[in-house]
Length: 275
Image (tube, rainbow, N blue to C red; front, side):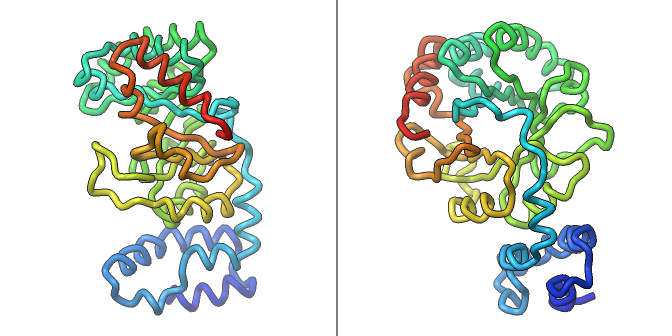
């Protein structure tokens, strides 16, 4: 079926929201590819515009349950990146201790290029720290470890979602098509992350998507984590709201790669008026 013909039928109610979601899973990626290549873009109905017009699917999306992860009043979503910590010369436990003392309530432990066994070993003392301080510790990528410890999970846009996952999870996205795929998944995500907000040291070649924030907020009531190059200096340039959170990685070392420096940063971020 041609995508344009499907859009017309969906708009007049000939397709169910569930079929609409399935069709967008297939055609949304092709749409993005044509948009980037510049071929045939004007012949394809914009995905965001279609979302707005398909009231049935929009209603289904907007009635998803609230997040079980990002319920804290603190807007900071701090990422303890193992590779960055090693490069800066700070231990994971010092980073986590400083973040917790500074009032950070949402902390993700991310560590690429290590085995699941090493990740689990590194995670153990971090669990003790966050349990003592009441912070939420989020596991990155390792679904089996998250299940074993009953910790929330964060998945990248291309990471497989286990059918039997029982812990709450969040999903990274970088486009409206990826947002739709994330929202139609089972089990459903508890929050959505959108990148990249600003060019960063780790992802210089990734296009910024600040222009998509308003559309994301309109399309889903799930909490939204903005990520990518966010600092104390530029966070005010981003939209604010009760369900918007800000992920920080590199800027967390602004006051030094020590527990005291991380603590100072967490306090400084929390003190920003209006977040």
